[in-house]
Amino acid sequence: MRDTNENMIEILNATKDNHLCFSTIQLPLNGEVLKLKFGVEPIDYPLIKKILDFKPYENTGVAPYRYFYTKSYRKDSDNELLAYAYVRVEQLKNHKQFEFHIGKKYLANLIWFGEIKDKKIIEKFICHP
Image 1 (cartoon, rainbow, N blue to C red):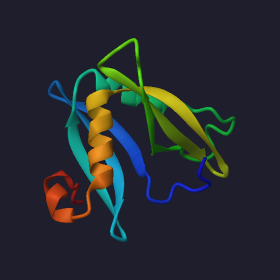
Image 2 (image 1 turned 180 degrees about the vertical axis):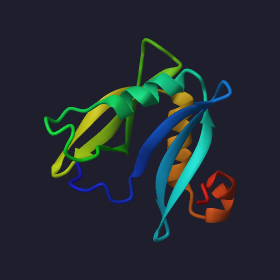
Image 3 (image 1 turned 60 degrees about the horizontal axis):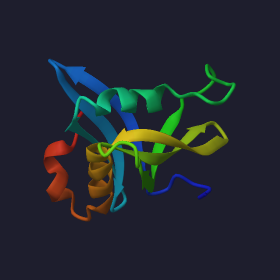
């Protein structure tokens, strides 16, 4: 397991808006950190929320938790729509990698965003303050 979250995609949020579901992530790209929002399948929304609600350390009120996709995953042989992804969960100096169920389409999005080299390709997903 890596000792740093450097160059990992951070999973920030999952939201619903008029029956549409979205995920917000932070993507490190060419020295910048971009905040991106994109649509996800309804099956992914509760799975992302489950990741973001997971608080394994005792200091739950002391500091925020952070969740990073580690670029590691495996198939779920029992469900062709799902996969297992490994997420680094951090709070203060605590960090550990945990396995979570996620939709294969969401996983494909994380992989795709992680392979992007040109900001222009993802311009429409960038959240502007």
